Length: 286
Image (cartoon, one colour):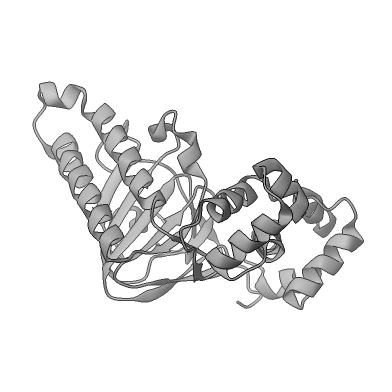
């Protein structure tokens, strides 16, 4: 990415047909719907979650400086505030929803970002999506009836069921499929929640109630990566986001991810990326 400044379009959570509804399900299109609300922006930042399920075609999709590869069976989760390109031209479905629509299921707001669904997982996820979409179409476009009165509650439960089923599939971690492993999954989830304050393998192991050796073995079996590689990758991702998309000073970027000393942060970032934070910002500034 050149240093040329680009506008990041903001997408508010405004339903095109039902202003009071925090859920929208639509086929993927390069134009129309939300895409027409910021027609001049190459990059977008949404105030809601976006679940993209590809059923045909292929393409690359940049989200927070990380390239995701769409193909039949791929699933990508974009969370509120993440900066991303417009989805590539492909067949599929977008499920958009707000944090408020998840009600008390706040734990589903965090977690993995992308999946390559195997045949069984893909079949089940599509089945859940079909039921959700059928009830969504009835609720939004069907006639008002007794069913309509509790329709939003039912849609909320069906969305939670879909997300829970997705959560059972092996996610991708740093581009690799996470082999089902309860210890590794608990570790990855904890890193997502605690990366800015917890930096050592020993601290994560203590919180999870395992030894560092057990954590290392589980991580290697599930991802082929060491626990430290997973921790460092998450720290680097957050630093890259802040450097590319904000004007936060380099020293403050370091503090936000847990480095009290700016020099230590600069050494860590340079060792991990091959570029000093200032140079990275100049090269990737949006």
